[in-house]
Image (cartoon, rainbow over the protein chains, first blue to last red):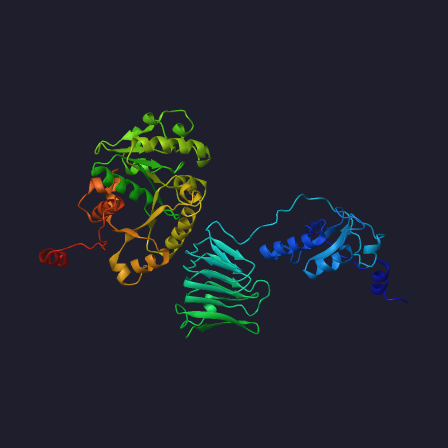
Length: 242
Length: 270
């Protein structure tokens, strides 16, 4: 006699839960001559570092022809720059130059979503900060309610960071005044990032996703010059002693 | 050249309206033409503190919407003829203020007066942003408490980004007015010290107004403290603040009652 429970489960398969989630895929349309276009891509990536990271990208060959020079290596050239190609359209698998490509499965149900504006420098805020290379320099105090986000490198604040203000950086954060707000460093996974402050009174310190609040900071260090570093998976706040 | 001054704070109940009236009356007594404008549409108070509530016919909203002329809505103070008030409406809300309408009224006020002092509503929303938008200068009214200081910090951020001056790449001149200051409680560390507040907000200090019954009494009789009790400690602080606003360089001192030896003896006995 069969076990009634297992009988039920074999008759009706377990319910699979599924939810919808949509991502905006960017469509890249290379143009001839390809070496120049790749240079342009490099420039754009350098100007707006986070634009392609973690984003699905579709390659549209519509502006190219079967015989465009450099077509054979195009897919590798783009992938080498960290761009994730999830689909190719506008061309044909039967073109000899692209026959050896590793073609991703064709996706269904895409809808055009208009031109995506490529940000020139996504971190540049209205405050008029000075940007040199990957470093963002803010000359004044960051006030409560303001948020500075910089996904390319370090942030240097010459003033203070008020309670209720927030600094988010891919690299390290340096505060020459008093740090009273939140400092979130190493956002892109840079665990060696640090947070420095001439006067450490931070509400929250986060490094690569690990965080500490004011209560976690040694009271003898509060109000002193200090730095926060990541030690394994703990945020450590240490006095800054020259 | 008219100056537009906004009196703002973020937090409510810190003394914006009292300070608007007191500074307005102090500047007017020095012979300058002053108008105080109530931007707190729906919760108007400035008319009460100025003792003009029985004379309001038209208000800011009527002028902004073109239903009344500016000269019909302005009320001249009975005690000081260089002082006028433009009241807010109590029955409408802040959505009735359009930015074009406010701009037009501010331009007209600039032509008529030396000082246009705008009493901002509390908060950081539309009403507060409209009140600060045209400002050349700002007085940030702050109590020596952490919540008030943080809200003032937020307002300073908005003054640096959401005003006409900021949009043109210029700066609104900012001054800190510390109100409801109690030297005894500050000495017992029950409130933030002047140094603490200045360190956090890092803007110049316009004055320290002590907590005083004179302010309450004046509000209740419908007179700015600088008119009703001109020799009181808070009034002296406001008079000095007004002189600093006009460009005089004066040392800011923590206000304390100066008592003679006999006063002290009698007070102790009482």
